[in-house]
Amino acid sequence: MSASEPIPILGGTGALGAGLARRWAAAGAAIVLGSRSAERAEEAAAKIRGAVPGADVTGLDNAAAARAAEIVFLTVPFRAQSENLNNLREALRPGQILVDCTVPLAAAVSGKATRSLGVWQGSAAQQAQEMVPEGVTVVAALHTIGAPTLSDADHQLDEDVLVCGDKKADKARVARLIELIPGLRAVNAGSLEMARIVEQLTPMLISVNSRYKAHAGIKLTGLPDADHWA
Amino acid sequence: MSASEPIPILGGTGALGAGLARRWAAAGAAIVLGSRSAERAEEAAAKIRGAVPGADVTGLDNAAAARAAEIVFLTVPFRAQSENLNNLREALRPGQILVDCTVPLAAAVSGKATRSLGVWQGSAAQQAQEMVPEGVTVVAALHTIGAPTLSDADHQLDEDVLVCGDKKADKARVARLIELIPGLRAVNAGSLEMARIVEQLTPMLISVNSRYKAHAGIKLTGLPDADHWA
Image 1: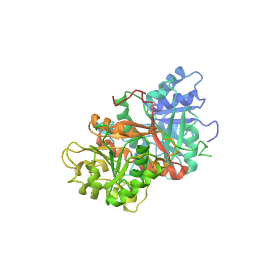
Image 2: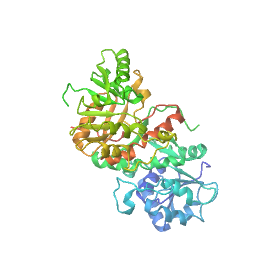
Image 3: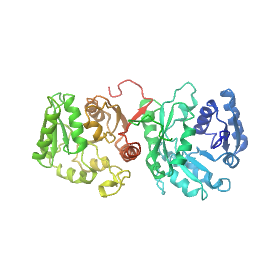
Image 4: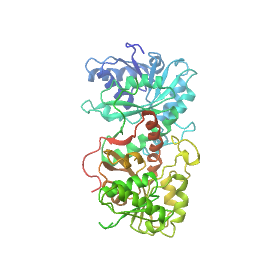
């Protein structure tokens, strides 16, 4: 990524996407919010510009947003993941990295948010890898970061983001973007298939949150302090 | 549990069981190690008595160990879980709590330790609940605590233990035992079915450990400081 490339967030009008956009914008990154309708995306962008002084945030339709940079974040509910990926078939091009943040909560079919659905491919991220055009690489990340804590600018983040993907170099590029947000550490959680496990953390955290009336995150203890991505 | 009840650890000659025994013994708890053979259990107990000054650790066969207290820990590999539970059918009695620490690693069938097996009941803990005698309650815990860090007395623990079970009162009793070990915090992770998720953390941590040459544990951020078990 060139230093000047923006960060496209598809589904950026949702809670997770908007929360990430706020944090990245506050950290000085340029953001392109994508949504089904360019108008709704631009409305959401204006909201963030109003909330974050100096924010460089614009809104486009998803396909246009997906063309804005090499690394593209997809932050839609599981219910909408397939449809979004179908719609992106013409927009995504070889060499791009799609960062899938989807969690297959049972809530997608009116079940509980503390339970998950089995995805045939093993995980939502692996489903995404099957659906993106040839040459596009999927990296899975950001499942355990709560939208409420992202959106609360006064909340000091102090969490790990477990990053799954088949190539370390791709994960490292995504990690650099994640770590632009103060308080987030990106941890290499293994190959893309490991998303089967990492995606499951979200329903567990949702369950913990309801019990403790909290916004819990995950941290791994015992890791060396050195920069693992160098 | 009366204050004088010991802590039985079935499969206590294995790495996790022996590590827990050392920590609990160092904290002043009486331990009964269980093994298939009383002789091997007593050998393992003698080793801990040699390593931990003042340790109150004895060794018995699993069935005798299971009768030594109301709360019994099962720390065997998944490969041996069913056989152990079959053998315990006559020993366990209504009112007891079996704390299942089993992780269904694919290593049980010569697969990778970074992958897991699907268990028909949903998790090893739910399989245990199906196999114990009527009136025995299964609580799942301690999956993410590494045997190497437990056995290294110089290693300061600072990790959470995610505890799953269907009754809070049962989980609270188990939590009290877990929190006898300095540096371990027991977190209520929900009903027993949530073990489907918690058991999966171990292969993920094994994967992280091999990559980072570390002994990683789990910690949840954002939880209130108050004692959740009171």
